[in-house]
Amino acid sequence: MDSARVHNFTFNEAISFMVHCEMQEEIDYYWGKLSADPKAEQCGWLKDKYGLSWQIVPTVMEEMLRDRDKKRLARVTEAFLKMKKFDIEVLKKAYKGESGA
Image 1 (cartoon, rainbow, N blue to C red):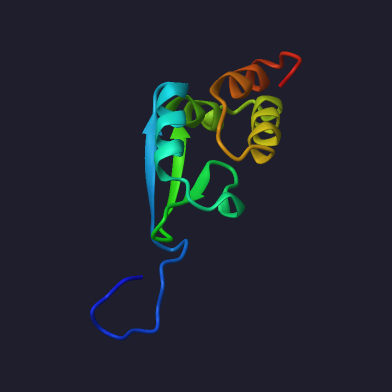
Image 2: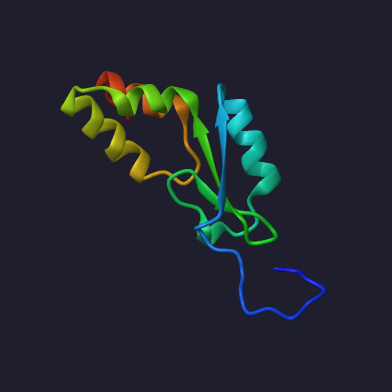
């Protein structure tokens, strides 16, 4: 972390920002603008050039994760755990139980 004063700390995942996106184009836009460390990308999380953590999340995912159907929840969870940047269509297919998710 840049500072005019000497300090012994840096940014970590305890401080992060979340961006809710309605459309895939928004996810792609923010991902392209913010991601600076491909090794730090996982499950919608990324790090910017300053080391700040961000989670770029589709709004539809919140609905999916609140569903009480355990099979749907398991499919969505299995799908997103494999992702770096979230793909809304893949998540929707997993939620519906469609093949190719």
